[in-house]
Length: 157
Image (cartoon, rainbow, N blue to C red; front, side):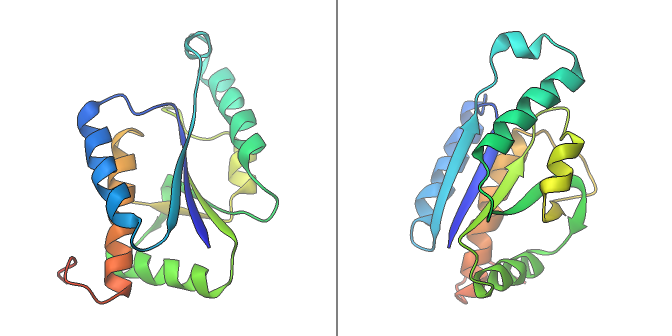
């Protein structure tokens, strides 16, 4: 099974990129994982919020395959502990899915079409984080999940 993080627009802050790189290197020992970035031209960012979301929706939809299991990282998703998230991933692996795609939307969230396509929604907190920061949080939690499933010492319950 392959995991994909589909994110809208590039990560702007160097410190976030550096943190993400650390966990990408670590994840290579556990799973097939790839980050795909949908670039948004500057002229799109000058449009209304709805026009921006429609552009992002088109780009996201073009990327997704019919059989993808799509999980939105969304403030209205299910909250879970790190152990629950690890068990959730184990369940997806046991289901013999080919590709699980996690999506982090742009600054204005997702268009309804993406919500309808999604198989699930997960929230990392009741607090709101920038779509830039959640990228680092996600790759760290993905790494943490695999160490939990392998019984390694990274996670301390």
